[in-house]
Length: 137
Image (cartoon, rainbow, N blue to C red; front, side, top):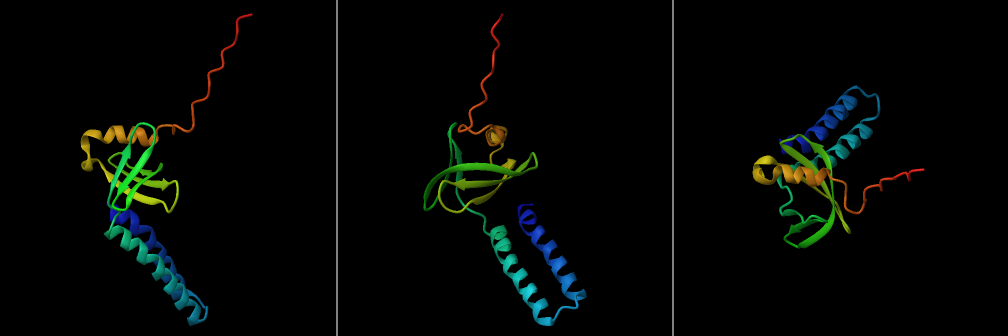
């Protein structure tokens, strides 16, 4: 499923590019250039699908941390796709590039619901609005 989510949009774009190149009256050089650019988009999608990031996502109750081989990074997590039994998350470190993570219930079934609640909870840097109480007159 993970590979499908990463590669399907790029394959659909490839069908659109191929259909355009087939029907277009543009010069062959332009059609070939578009198809080559498409190929450049396909490579990172396939690479990500075949070699996902390795590490551990940790929530300590206040902040998110991505523990991977080069070292730990603090950042924020944003759910991009929630299918109840799987999550596509974007982890955005304070510095550097974001990391896309595909998580499935089977990876940690006992803590799955806690993870989903933490991902969808209001971030700690956004405190809840204060309740305005009217004074009796």
